[in-house]
Structures are given as structure tokens and as C-alpha cells.
Amino acid sequence: MTRICILSFVLLGFGLVNAGVPFAAVGPVTWIVLASLVIGKPIGIVATSLFSELLGFRRAPGLDLRALLALGIAAGIGFTVALFFAGAAFPPGAVLDEAKMGALLSFSAAFLAVGVGRVMGLKRS
Image (cartoon, rainbow, N blue to C red; front, side, top):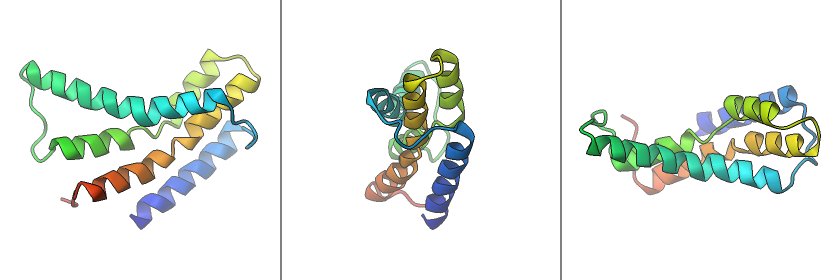
């Protein structure tokens, strides 16, 4: 867990330096982007996997539903793609800064994934 925490803060620092967003740029768009990444991505990953199973596909051996959920939460860390799309979707200004801040704050998904994994009793394989 210590490595994940350190890596999360390194990624946050990298993102803050490269995104050029002031800390004060938190607003409604920030929370929408953050919720989309931390809640929407895991729902999409789990739902798509379950749907794929209905079509006859199989999950990888050892990837049970608990692990899939933790994986989906970890995938909610949305630095690169979310920052790219924010830059492409919004003109320079307050809304762009808020969207970028939401993407940067998605580093919290790492801590959430570790916590969910521990609560569900996941072990390293």
C-alpha cells in the first residue's frame, strides 16, 4: 500500500506541474469530472464485463467480481486522457481549469481502490 500511496502523490505532483491549474480552480465542473471518473468508470467496466460474459466471453482466471470492482476503481485515475479531453472540450478559462482539477483529483481513486480491496479481502497473487 505504501508504494501505491507514494506513486499517487508523485502522479498528482506530475499532473499539477504539467496541467498548469491553480489550486483555487475547484468548482461544480471539478466534482462532475471527479464523480465521472471515480464512480462512472468502475460502473462501466464492471457492467461491460458482465455483459461480455452474457455474450459468451470469459474473465481472466482469478479475476473475480471483487477484483474486477477494485480494478475498475483503480482505472478511475484519469490523468492523461481526462486532461487531454478537457483541453479539447473546453475553451481556456474557469471551466477548463475546473475540469482539469477534477481530473487531477482523481488520484484519490488509488486510495479508494486499496481500501475497497482490503475491505473485500483481496490478496496479492
